[in-house]
Length: 103
View (cartoon, rainbow, N blue to C red):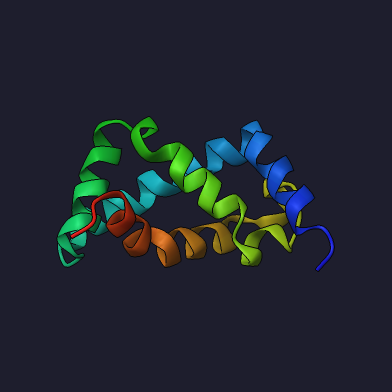
């Protein structure tokens, strides 16, 4: 555990990581809307993202870049890969949604 902060900083600045997070949150939003079983705050964020992915993109980007599960792996999205990124988007979605819209 020596490169997490430098890796997180690099990811936060990386255009490819940003694009992947944008696509990943749109994918997750569509999945949650289709299932219709997520908590109300999670569905609210999902509907907002489908309408405008940029509305919460920086929040997801910052949280994901700093997740130890991601920043301990590397400083590029190619190193992190799609399965891990999508798993981490899923892992943070409900809690981040509740932080955005506290109940």
